[in-house]
Amino acid sequence: MTVITRNSLTVRGAEWLERWWHIEFDSWVESGQNSVKEEAHSLAKSTAKEQLTYDVFETDMGWVAIVGGDHGVVRASLPEATPETALDYVQPEVNTAIHSHDDHADTRMLVTAYCAGEPVDLADVPIDTRSATPFFRSAWEACRLIPVGETRSYGWLAEQAGNVKAARGAGQAMARNKFALLVPCHRVVSSTGALHGFGGAGLPLKSRLLAMESNRRAG
Figure 1: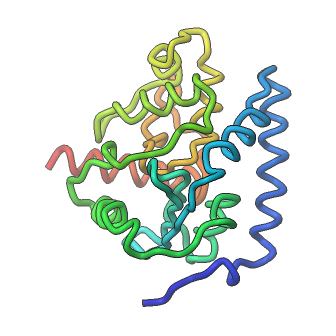
Figure 2: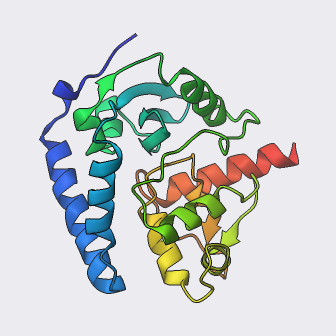
């Protein structure tokens, strides 16, 4: 088994982190919320005394990386072409994490089974949302309630999160989803059913995930 360490990350990780901060700041300017600073402060506070661990593993869809601690997963990647790319997508938390194959055994088993098309539910995998704003936390929790093989609109998600007028904010919550697959943001679509932006491999992966879930439900 190949173990990928933080030392194997390329300069691409630093570049991605810089882009991430720019995206976060731009999102704050547009929404009029100081959520980026709040999230960074909350993350530092919530994990100050907690040792995070990570794992990266191969699935039928690609390599997945996860970082977590005592309260659950704090960040997870979508399936990526290489382990290095998957680790890049769990920045910055992976920078202070140590590798542990055992700590994430259950999550690894479930995610691997999901990516193989097996009928597993990832909604019960513990996630740590303490660093999130209340609205983002509510939106992520609501997203986890969407049944496998079904979709909901951003308007529905906003209503479930407590603000029926915040469809745009719901979209931002999905765009900044730190828990790929565990919070199934691929199940959230426009009111017309059209697919919108998606991280990692983009819309083709979103479409593939929805098709896989639909076929599994029909079967």
